[in-house]
Image (cartoon, rainbow, N blue to C red):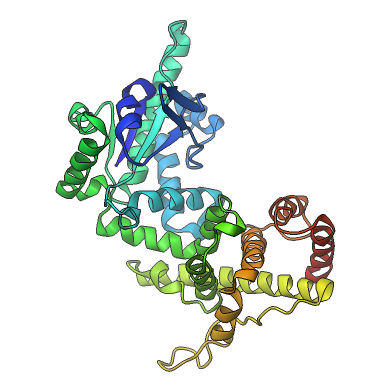
Length: 373
């Protein structure tokens, strides 16, 4: 269930939703009251201030901004910045991951505006209202494109939806489950899941890397290592292409699959540069990787690489730190950040610094820059 609300309207949700994620639409970074403390996150899908001002002053049409955003979530290969469709993929993942919740209670997402200031003058008030109107429309239409209904304060049934969150977490959860069963668009329809699968397949490696950022090496269990390894294999063998191309017209299928094959090729090249650097710097041998299948489209075709050997190596507990480093390295490559850039060095140092000794990190970065050149 997705809401666009002022903070004061959202407090009941904060108190009684079992799993609530709040994205800020203002300056507030946190909500704190009694024993409730919720940090507000940046969603990564909201237009920047310059675009919003341009829409408000009429120099840019709201419709064109929204149309461009929707195009990027359906065709991530055409995205101006990979961070936008990736961020949207993460949000859709939150909405659709009901089955991962033992009580089967859907997640609630709130896009929160700051409450109006009493000291606000007429000019500031006019701008705020225009901004809120545009962003409410933008979020509503963006999620409608993947068949998710957004509930805002202008919704005629807003009070009915807010009543779901009365009377404690247990009652609120029961009402939430019931409401989402009665109206699939409040959580996830077939179209929503189809688009989720498309984005998750396209950004599989980047999404795993994002989830890893909240984990310590000791948190990673065997099941995690199996899943992480399989995600890499789906990219290396091109098996991630099928979910991406389902439901598209043939012309768009060809374009998108061609772009994903190219992205997968970059992932393989990135892995091989990582493996080469580990071999040269530390004499550590990693499993060899090749892109795609032998014998093309034949039914009995086999991957060009030894997938069994790859899985056997990376599901070992001692290689958890290597998996984290590999995911960071490949993600940076697919986002256009190669070892000759300052941002690559900065992010790899941040990741590997928690895993290895400082001299090991500096030696790897120095070596990988030479190998990749």
